Image 1 (tube, helix red, strand yellow):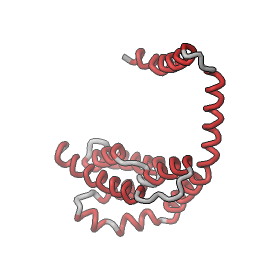
Image 2: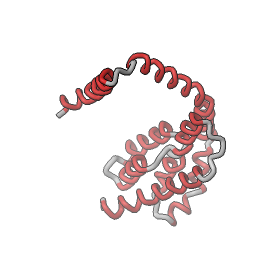
Image 3: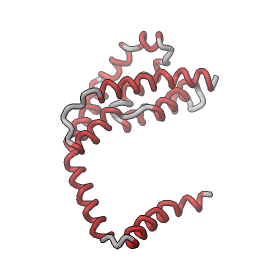
Image 4: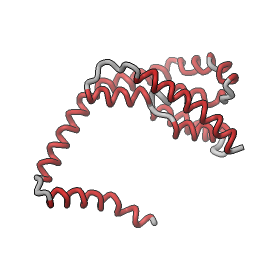
Length: 173
């Protein structure tokens, strides 16, 4: 099975290039044009990414993440959300890599088969890096006003966090 998966990506690329030749499209020129657009897009979104990464670094280094976690413990207890996953829930909408570090720490400390490890695993897989996604996509398309995007996305993240804990408790006792 692993051998088949090694050929999927090259097969897709061959199919795309082959289709371009059949349609008599200038495949190489189109490839270069797409690469150029990709570089331009990267340059356009770079300031938003730098600001986001700086903010994540400041939140972690300043101890604000620990303070927010401590302040939210009563709310987490009320919602039956383990306090050990609160740092993950707080950082996941902001930074995927920062959340991954916290996720790995949770798995190392509590184990992947523990209740906390399972909730963290479902949380990691069922929520989005909201601020990163908005910064990248809106930065690339030059959208200035996010309107309802941020409140709707953060609401979806909150539901994802709560449902992660509920689903694990109901389905994986």
